[in-house]
Amino acid sequence: MLACVLIALAFISCDCGKNPAIQVILTNKGLQSGRHVAAGWIQEKLDHVTLPDISGEIRVGFLLHIGYKLTGITIIKSDFPEPSVEFYQGFSGLKTSIEGLNVALTGSWEAHCGFVHGGGSFDMALFGVDVVSIVQLGRDAGGRLSLTSVNCNAQLGDLNTHFYVNFQVNQDLTLDLPLIGPPVVSASSLQLGLKGQFYSVKCPKEPPFVAMPFATPEQPAYMLSVGLSDFTVNSASFSYFSADLLQAFINDSMIPPSSPVRLNTTSLGPFIPQLPKMFPDLLMTLQIYATNFPVFSFRSGAVVLSSSGAVKAFAIQRNATLTPLFKLHVVSARFFVAFTGIKVLLLKLATGFALPHTKHAQLVNPVLTVEEGFVAFNSDAMLLEDTIFN
Ligand SMILES: *[C@@H]1O[C@H](CO)[C@@H](O)[C@H](O)[C@H]1NC(C)=O
Ligand SMILES: *[C@@H]1O[C@H](CO)[C@@H](O)[C@H](O)[C@H]1NC(C)=O
Ligand SMILES: *[C@@H]1O[C@H](CO)[C@@H](O)[C@H](O)[C@H]1NC(C)=O
Image (cartoon, rainbow, N blue to C red; front, side, top):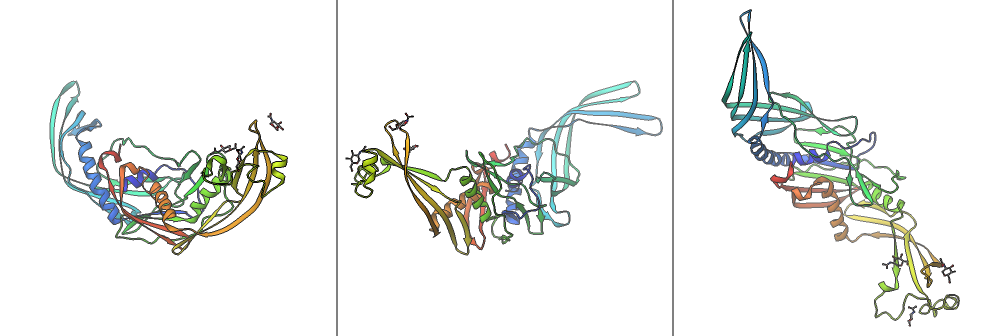
């Protein structure tokens, strides 16, 4: 869980001095679950690792210097005990301790002392090694999560990992997720505040509203909590509207065959007598579009949607040219959104960035509640070990 969240959130671009629209809280329960998965993964990887070469010099008395080099060091067997991990408030980070690590190594050695050279292979066994590592979490100038090793007596080589900049949600939208402030580490959780703003791919621009402050309650019984402000949903709505995507055409082919009224100028003649006179027996199409972006507001236990729209009618000429006929003016409405549908949508949205690799993780018992100005999403997760780190 931890690695999944950190990897997903690391290396994403910057935006500062604003309220986060998305808050992510990793609880101690989530951290402990990540520890278990990470231990299994490290154990498996250690068996295929070649360690970096080691070289140095030993001084014997004043005159004698023995230089040495160890190369091709390979782990042939390791016994990696499950580490303990805790939130480390003092350093705003994480403290990992491993006790009793046993490793068997093999490799080649060379040594030289003056003109004398020697070399060969070696086998080495290390028993009962204790490792303590403290990693400090921060936010770099680019709004990305940074990890700094404060104290570690073991070094890790390269980790081949994909870092996501922002998420291309679909062909029309991207979701921008830089950290708004540094990560906050308490004794019981890690909290991240993210920008959480959708942009249109075609015409990205800033909406005429800003994210309001809110506080996602910490729920220690769950591994992960995500708070999603209505700002995030409205930025999606604004982006769709700006890109002219909140519109639809209704054609005669979409009207049920059983309907006595057809979408053509003949059939609508009894209602609008001029139609068949000016445009005899032509098919028609209706364009329904938003005249402003729909605004969602989250209220305790409900979602209110305000929207306004219009309808334009066209005659379809025989050469397929559309001739405007009339326009039905603004339909303005406020809805209390029926809950199941929007709940499914919000759950999808929340899981989309909480666990960007949904194929690597499975949510267990997700719960969503609508609060004043935000939705709170709490869940446990089951990670699928093989795929997370690859
Ligand atoms: C309906 O007609 C319009 C105008 O001809 C066209 O652009 C649109 O693709 C049609 N939609 C469907 C679903 O057939
Ligand atoms: C228009 O609808 C009428 C039925 O109301 C139908 O008889 C006629 O063939 C339709 N015209 C076109 C162009 O589809
Ligand atoms: C299509 O037909 C209409 C009506 O007959 C005509 O006014 C228009 O110029 C035509 N357009 C094209 C591109 O041929």
